[in-house]
Every structure is written in structure tokens, then in C-alpha cells.
Image (cartoon, rainbow, N blue to C red; front, side, top):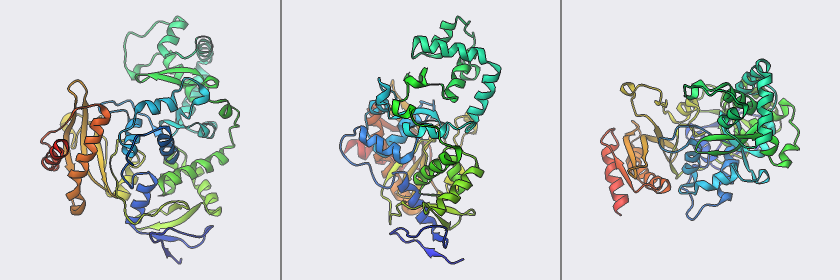
Length: 426
């Protein structure tokens, strides 16, 4: 099959013609640029427009409950925007009026915030494991789900505990997220089924309300498309967010099956939206979005939370960046290699290191509990400590912490401690 090398200027052509070839470095830069990480955050204050543009580019923000540093959805935005007011995101996803809602919580990659216009695309039957499980739960607990809906309709936004109290149910004596009461299970089933949504949160606790009181009227008026139509749109959004990816990469972004993703990819290739490519070092064919940027170089630096879209799929991360990454939260302390909550350090188009971070809120300190530089990347390694120090200073300011402290653990710790002192004393 004939090949065409794609240069830094991009691509041209339609349909499923000759396969193009991308170097590994081009694929890295495309992926970084598609994720809005190829340049430093612009200076100046942030507004709602900045956040909206980032989330539109990414397609979603994954939610996670771990708060040792900051919530995952907040860190994903911070990596791209730097010091931004967190309340801006609150106003987009949990506004006082449904008409003002720009983002909505739903199951997407996992629990996620997505632009409201994507919500109908994620509602086809049994799209996600959560909806399949919820359908079974509805079969077995129909009366309870009906009762919960009636309570929510009557009392408005409420936590599962408040709903349970209204039902007059006896609270469980044992707490823990893995021991939800039946009322909590019912609320989550109704959430997965799209009958209730998250009106707002206090701390990290959901306040549930009827979905028709959560979504803007214009979104409620949208019909749920046929699965194949929704899948094509979601795969296109995934390809836009990845820049370039395999069928498996594109399926994973919104947690779709590989078979329907492959069909959607075929249609998008025929329409000229996706361009088949062969990527150096990839075993599977790649697909390049026709609007993907192919920068000659990338100049950004970022600390990426474990649930950042650039690194959340570990096999893709290893394929693109030659970076083996596993979160060690659930690993016993004695068996951890790098630390508890470790953030990869992106410098340019390379992942140059990893930092184990913790926010000591009572002490006003951002703690670097370990700092590691990746082996075999000498040009990047030289800049890793300086890049990390700069990002840590911005992160500390954003979190309202007065100091950055580096523990003497890891092969980057000494250099990072020196650079942090330069930044903070300069």
C-alpha cells in the first residue's frame, strides 16, 4: 500500500485512500496538542469562557473522590489553565437554575461532567455497564425506585440520606462507600437510568433531583438518537480529543464497545472525518482526526492527575510516551514504588517524571513526598526539575498553600528542591 508522510503542516485528502504514516514523535505531539497541553497557560485571569473551551475540547472531565491533593476534575482543568477560580466550574455544572447549566454529571468515560448537549447521546439503552446494572436493579426493586422518585419530586434536591429519612427507612449502622443503603443504591440506579441527576454537591455529596429539573429545557427537548448515530458523534468527539488513536483508544474515551466503535470509524473514514494512518511503533492502525494539529514542537509543562484524559488509558500512555503508569492508591504502602498519589510530569511532548503530591491544608504546605525523573531522557531530564518547580508554585497558589516542601525521596528530589527554592525565593 502506498504511503504519504505527514509533515508538520498537517494532512489533506478524503475518504479511505492511501494510508499515511506518522512518526512516533508526531503522534505524541498530536496527542498533546489535542488535549490542549502543547503550550503554557496564557497569562491573565480566567473566566467561564476559558473553562468552557477546555471542556468542549476534551469532551468530558472525569470525576473521582480522592482529595489528597484536589479532586480529579479540578486538576484536569488546572493542568491546562493554571490558577483559575474553582467556583467558575461550580457555576457551569451546578448552577442555581437549570437553564444556566453548561455541564452535567453522567456516566461517560466513568463518572464524568460532560457538555449538556452530549447528554442525549449517552442515553441509548444499555450503553454503559452502570445502565445495564441499573436495569436489573429496577426489575428487582421497582417499588423502591418508584418511592424514591416520589420523594424527590416532593422535596426537591436531596441527599440519599435525606431521601432515606423521608422514606422512614432505618439507616444502616455501618458506614462506608461499599456498604450503601438500599436507598443510596436506588438513587444511583435512577441516576444511571437518567431519571434523576445531580442538582449540586456540598463537599462531594450529591444532591439528587428529577432530571427534568436538572437539564435545560432545550436539552430535554432533544431526542435520544439511534445508537449508531450517537456512536458516530461520540467517536468523532473522542477522535478530536485524542487527535490520533486506535479503535480501542476511541472506544475507551466514552466507554463504548469496540465493535460499534469500529463501525463508526468506518463511516467517519468514508466521510473524510478520520484519516487512516500507520504510526511508528503501533501494532494497530491509527486514525487521525482531519482537524488535528501537528505542531512542530510543544512547549507546555503540566502535572497530570491519574484521571487526566491524556494518561487515563494506561496502555495508550505506554504506547505513546513509553511511560509505564499505575496508580498505587490501593497498593499497600510497603509495596508502593513511586508513592500514593502520583502525577506524571509532562514537559514538551515527553513525560519526564512523576511526583507524589499531597496538600497539607492545615499546615499550608504543598508536599512533594517523592520526585522521580524518567530514565533515558537526558535532554528532557535537564528541564524536568525547573518545569516541575514552576508548576508546583502555580499549584500551591491555586490551592491557597503558602509553601512547597520537597522530601528527599526520588532521583529528582534534590534538583527539584533546589529549583523550588529558586522559584519561591525569586
